[in-house]
Image (cartoon, rainbow, N blue to C red; front, top):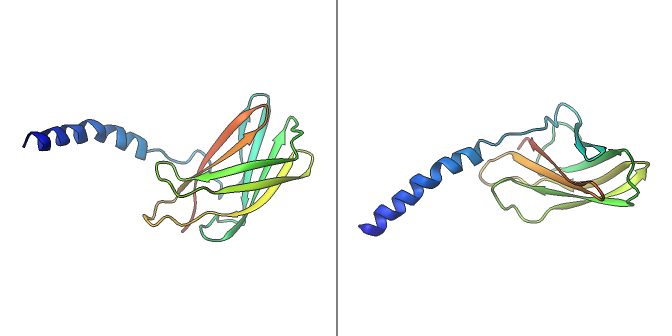
Length: 136
């Protein structure tokens, strides 16, 4: 009985934190167009096509870095906030000054969740995260 009460207390203490975490929503409406964020003195723009962005289909990821970036390539990491969906990285190769593109797939979550996060590491500026919804 004592273990049951302790377990119940732990659940009651952690429940508000879980609801606060699960209420996280998108900060990027990728289906409406590109999303821009600032990293240091650089503006980093993410776009995904075709639209609507759908899971389980090949997608083209494009990142523009305004303010210069001499790196020949970047990595974009895809993850689902709060749920491990395996390692999913897209190599973005420079195809013109400041523009990087690559192809990848966003898997469908068995739970039906649609909130995903793309993280781009820009050398000299750090990581930029974009959180967005996909269609299933």
